[in-house]
Image 1 (cartoon, rainbow, N blue to C red):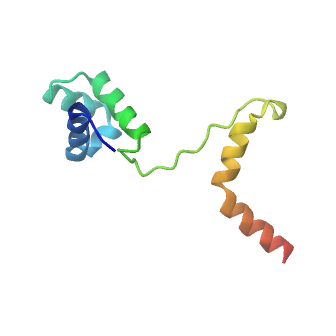
Image 2 (tube, helix red, strand yellow):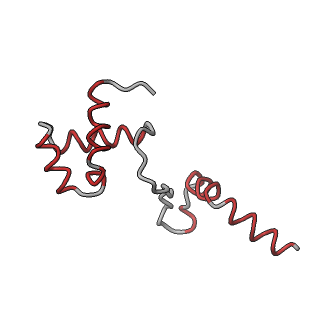
Length: 97
């Protein structure tokens, strides 16, 4: 993946100060140190996360619709089933044996 010089600068900041991913107060301090606004730093980090340049190590679980059973979003259900496929396979094979 090719990064612009600005994106590379943000990636270097994150590599040098990984705590800014989870700590807004620290992100404010580091942003000021590098002459950026906190909002700019936060937005650029989000863009790099979307592109896969920054990994938080956390697994994103889809947001399942919290409405009634009839309001269940089929795409959210499909995403959840894909994430849980190993669990489902183990359980169904244990029951069928």
